[in-house]
Structure formats: C-alpha cells, structure tokens
Image (cartoon, one colour):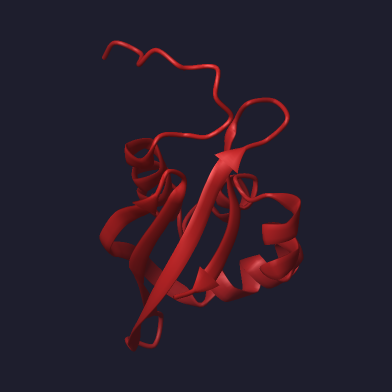
Length: 114
C-alpha cells in the first residue's frame, strides 16, 4: 500500500478522522494499552486513567462502531456498540474530536455523548 501524502495542517481530514475512530475501537477490548495511548491527556483523565480504562474494557467481550460519519473537519459522530461479557449489549451515540499531538501523531482529543 502506498503511503498517503500528508499536509502541513494540524488536523486530520474528515475521512482520516473516521478511519482513526474505527481503528481506535478496533483495538478494543483486546489491546487497551495501545488504545489508551491514542487518547489526549484530557481524554485519558476523562476515561478514569489507565486503571479505570482497563476496568471498563476488561468487562467487555467486543466493541464495534456503527454509522461513523464526519460532522466537521476533525469531528466524527458514531454509535459505539459495547458487548459485555455477560452477553448484554448497549449502543451509545458519541461525538469525537480527532487531532494531533505535539509529535504529529493522530490522537483522540475528546469524546462526549451525542
């Protein structure tokens, strides 16, 4: 696969933002440390720190993304489906803001229920 040229902007494109959100949730619940590293410091704190994050995702058997769409240059809205280990499922609508950290890596800057 040929790498996509990058621009000098500090915001990912809307397509890149949707792909990022899908890829981020694709890490969960199996690779919580890698997923947690993709959160901004404020999103990490909002998630309850690494221990709260591990506790939450440790209770899940699967996570999936439905209907992800860009609603702005770096904003994505999607329904996240959480399947718990007890077999119950919940669907929650979220809004995500995707950006870049000081190293230029794409991160999830913030999330909120939509």
